Length: 269
Image (cartoon, rainbow, N blue to C red; front, top):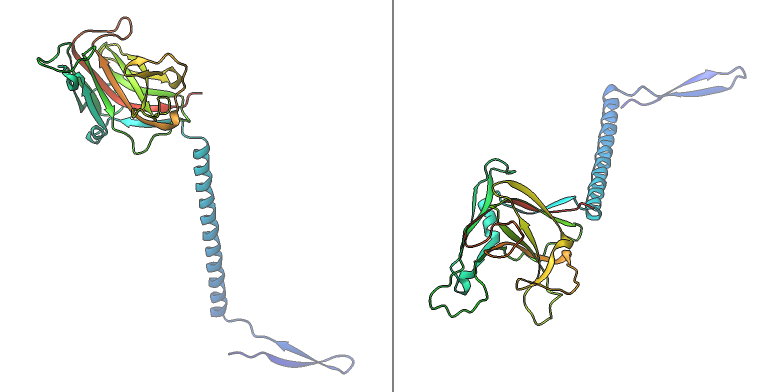
């Protein structure tokens, strides 16, 4: 190791001044010092960047929590996995002869994806011979989603949108919410319904404001003033009846066909 050296200088007064002279640092020493400084600076930059990224993630999470996206997919019929989320029902459960099926098929031109859901079947007003069921009317089929794992919160949205291609019949869109309108002893979910009329063989995006859905009990409109709780949605359905609907829609027994591309919730206000 180099040691500092001392040399004596004479002043004008005769005093001796001792100056300590340190040797210059070696190149290796200067390089090591520079490397340590660069490493410390690199770590500082990394910590700063990590802090910035964490802050950004927190800001994004908070903003989405306070202001949800303007639309939310509820169902998207682009694969066979979607079929597992639905079950079918019809008057055949009560002695009727109507039938229905649900499958994934080629959506053709106009769909957002190459595959769409196809809800189809036949509506019959007849009853099976010897049926012990006594129902007021037959000729209905429906596809209902299986209950969600918990519920879907649509409180931030005001409209249900569906991309559909129909056959000229009038269909019924139903939203099921947690039971709070009916009496506590009733086990059924609350149901809210709206008509969906579709011209034949044309893709359309139907938008139904949530406040246009009417409370119903077993297909009959409840006249009392009630308000849906969109924060507790437990399921949805699409159904068709041989009779009823809106003026101008196709009615009566026979085949039906409804293609479903997707169902979303929208915030339009």
